[in-house]
Length: 289
Ligand code: GLU
Image (cartoon, rainbow, N blue to C red):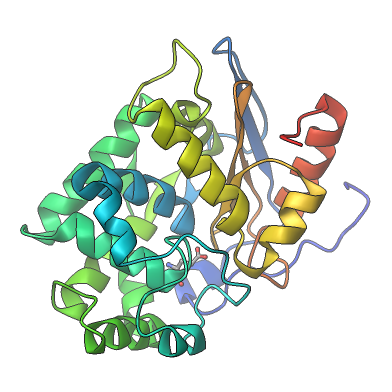
């Protein structure tokens, strides 16, 4: 892995992320006994982007329970994270909560009946509690940068609204969405934040065990967009990626892993991060299969 000098390219459609040096790498692993192991730039905060979709989904399910599934599906999309075409064909019900359209819906659900500030406060608090760290913040410059260039996401949100699948004004839901995507964490914090998904005693208990299993199932089947099958094949554990180059991966009952390397592969998932997870999973014999 170290010998391969193709780091991939950082996300270029969010200008604030495009200028990040792709040749960076960090990993943190928390095992079921609570021990934390790190390597690389483990304390460098990065933009977690779509990894927050796991936390907003957990909150949305907590607020609305299974009713959420009337608005969003649970099937892999087989299409790019920001694809519009499927949304039209399937009458405004996004395939799953981890593609952009689906995460805009879960954000809308978390927002329902309150101000964006309050919804964001709950999301940030959830993540801080999960991570056991108060030093986790939203980078407003990244949110503003995405807002200024987020034509795709605006198109998706208006499309959802046209199918009556948005409860708040598109600008309001998107503002909230861009801000939670702009949360910054180090791999150390992100791995800690993933502990509740391990499903073992002694870890923060933020959702029921049944929900932990379901979140993991969705991460496995939908967590890497149209690269989800490839990730399951190569790594073999649930994971959720973000275009900031982070991946949160869970070995149920055994470990929570966060990797970060901002260069992306063609699916928009961290190139070196995926490779590192594949090597680690193989060496540790970690697989759900
Ligand atoms: N905020 C990003 C977007 O909506 C998230 C995408 C990702 O991380 O995959 O495009």
